[in-house]
Amino acid sequence: MVYDLKGEENMQLLVGILYSAVKENCKRLKSITNGMAQEELDYKGPNNNRNSTAQLIKHIMYVDLNWVYRIKGQQLPMSLREQYGPMIDVNNKLPMVKGKSLNSFISEYESIFKMLKDTCTQLKDDDLDTVVTFGHENEKQATIRWGLWHMADHNRYHQAHINLLRKWYREYPSSN
Image 1 (cartoon, rainbow, N blue to C red):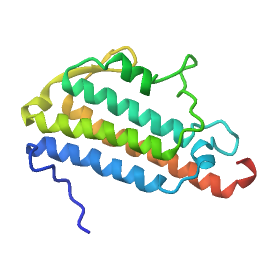
Image 2: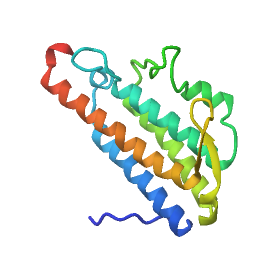
Image 3: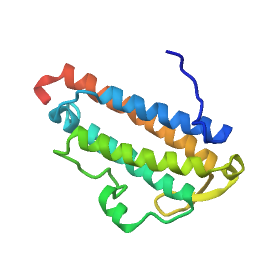
C-alpha cells in the first residue's frame, strides 16, 4: 500500500490534500476502534476519571460537524445540535455518553464525513482563504484551510487518548 494525500478527482489540489488528511484520520479512527466491546467503549480509565472512547468519538464528530457547516458558510441546524451536541456540559466537560454502540458512532461519523466530502467538492482552492469564526462563543477566527487541517489534527490528537484508554483497559482489568 502506498500512502499519499491525494484528493478526490473532483476536488481542487489544495482542498483535496487537506480533505485527504481528514479522510486518512477518519480511516485510522475506525481502525483503532475496530472490534471494541461496549464495556471498553464506555471505559473511563483506571480511576474512572477520564473521557471514555465514546465521549471522545462523539466530541470528534461534533467538532467535525461544526466545521462542515462553517465551511459551508451556514449555521449548524438546531436539529443537528440536539442530535450530536453539546460540545461541553454545564461543568465544561465532555458530555457523558454510555451504552451507545460503536456501530452507531461509526455510522453517524460516516454521514458527517460524507457531508464534508460533498462540501469539499464544491470548494475552490481560493475559498480556503475565507475566514470563519469558531470557539465556544465564536470568539476565534481561522481560515477554512486551517479548519480542514484542524479537523485532521484534532481527530489524531484524540486518537492518542483512545490508544491510551485501550492500553489501560488491557493493563488494569480490575478497574473495568
